[in-house]
Length: 283
Length: 308
Image (cartoon, rainbow over all chains, first blue to last red; front, side, top):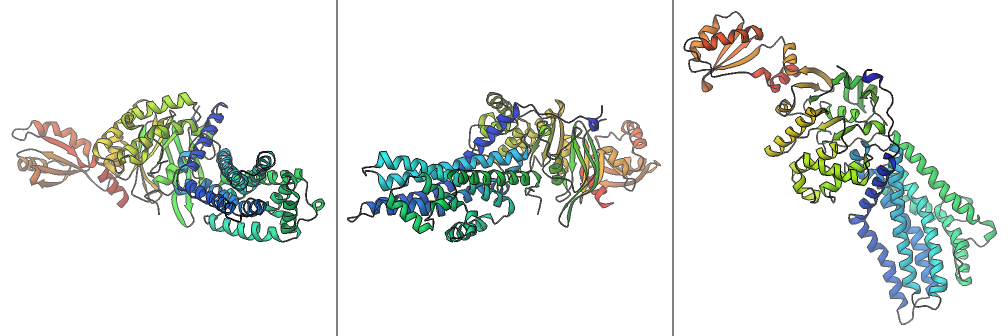
């Protein structure tokens, strides 16, 4: 038999989990090394420090107002999507830029699995970061208050779940953006401002296309907010009638479904795309 | 001989720029040198052969398999890329072990394979240091180690000796020779001809994306009938020797190399000339000290071929 006639090779099934686990760990380690984590850590620390300062003024700011401003507004509109953008948009482009993608492409991991594994690792890292930020903010705002252990802590747990679901949508979206364009950071910031910022605040059907819409709906449905806080959220967000909002199940399925579909499309895109790594001899 | 690497009518365009131009090439088992100046298409060829790029036209096969999107084949090949890129925060051993795990080896197997690979390239002493502190030679050795850590059958080395010091160069050459002797097929690219010459006599020459020649250095040289073979003869009485040679019908030209006390002889019938040499060496008063052919030097072959 000549080499030309050789039958297709089959890779041992036992190889795959080991390779994928190694890729997952490698990606997590990449994300936790370098300056990006330090910058984001400092960025997350600022609102926590601000909350502590405002809570300790002679005339302290109301805890509910801080919770609304920092946890229900700043985090889902700014910090959470920015975190997802910084990490997910670079899932592939950072490897291309650093010229290390070659080491991954010549390994025995299918390309689609390579992308999905790196995205999953990125999702885990960004979710952990945002979860830490939520926990830190709740602690900074409510620590020492009477209902901290009974009411606030369970609410913080549910808020973490909501932000984790938001990260699914954001990471899938920004991962795809990172494949589409080299200027993914600019495009991502423009998207965050225009779509998740402006569009999500307009009371019309188009806001159902934003991640923030489902995050807000889940916040209203899951977080068991005190009546005053509930009224404030509904009024500011233009979501007065809960009956008109999608159910929790629909919100979860929409965010997860969006994440799965966009990630699958991105993985197929990645599998079919050539990535030409610059060599010293090339232009 | 069954080809290990097959390019059939392969072209690769980058927009308007052509990387490879209708290349048909069958590389047999063993060590083969891939030669050409910068921009000749060597890296494009290696990226096509390792499935990083898809041919615009034609087919590329390695071990009889299509290479694009073939992870099972990747288990059998290794690539030492040209770019000097690493996960700099890792130690050398960590990097090579990670590459082994990405190839599907379990934790313990990967660690042991990394130990062996680092040992093979002479990096055991430094393998627990961060890569960012490595010299160029150490980085090249580490790149070679990651390429062979999973025991590939075919190894692609893109300019593996670039920027290395003489000691690292010698060690890397020995390592590649050892791999070839151990049954691993190696395709090694370089634009420095003597590097490849030190690795293997079998070469493939590329220029501007086209195959210029392939085969043994001497076979390639035989293709060039425009240019006579140039043989240097060194002896004390080289002027007397020149007089004798002038009478030989297979000698086309003689040039004095006064500094070397020798002659540069041009001939179009090298076999006849070499057959005549023993008699010349034994002739009274000649006493040849040294005989070598400039045309066995790849530099000369390459110049002839790209200029013809």
